[in-house]
Image (cartoon, rainbow, N blue to C red):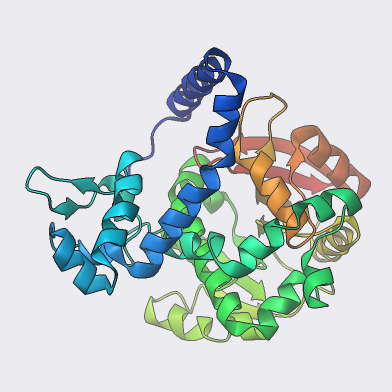
Length: 359
């Protein structure tokens, strides 16, 4: 995967925001607003395409509407109406002979695509996810996530009680993580550390990729026992069992000692201040004076232009109850809990790496 230079990505993003702003100012306000109001319909259309497996059926080449409808068990007329909308946004294409084919965006809906967002589309368009967002006004009024009120338990506990939805969430996050991996590894030299501890590292995708690129480093993957149960076998299969160990426990209680760097990728934003404080307290107890804390999160920019972090921030409000933060908010947050922010390293994946040390 070829990573474009960060300045180029930032320039393209600025131009896109300028054009979008100009468009919104040129058209009548109600027209621009109507387009935003109905944007959710596109999300559900993408979800339907993912659920039907349309992209998978086009992997071997273009197919007619009748062939495709039979393959995905859909009504032919309804299918062409769905595809007509998606084609207008560059998702799929219709050839001159009337057959449908994949586009680069449609490729990302294939199950076996190198970077597949199919599972993420299924998660975002799922009835559980939609239901929580329908209660956004309640979250804004109270400042509290809506899931616990709807289900009687916090978000992550709900996923354990609903294994099907929990698996969907895990697969969705894995697909997003795959998309982010190369930009992160290109932006930061993780190999400078002898031992890295991936805190809440799930099934190990991050630490595995780091160790593959850093032959002189060792890793410790730390997460709940049921999360990492299958990881030792995977490490053995790929030849990393001698360089990566698996430790189990809760990052609210204690975290393995001995690391030169502690990774927290998309962990801090999941939790409200009291829970986040417990995580940082456990880190302080585990880290030696020269160790580094690497928080990998979206950082909310101070400008007024659109940015993914601003939408994800509301996702955190609706679901687990966490939040995204600006750089100054991270600096203050870390200082309150015994850390000093040293450096912020941006990447082309909209994620930043915040390097901190013990104060």
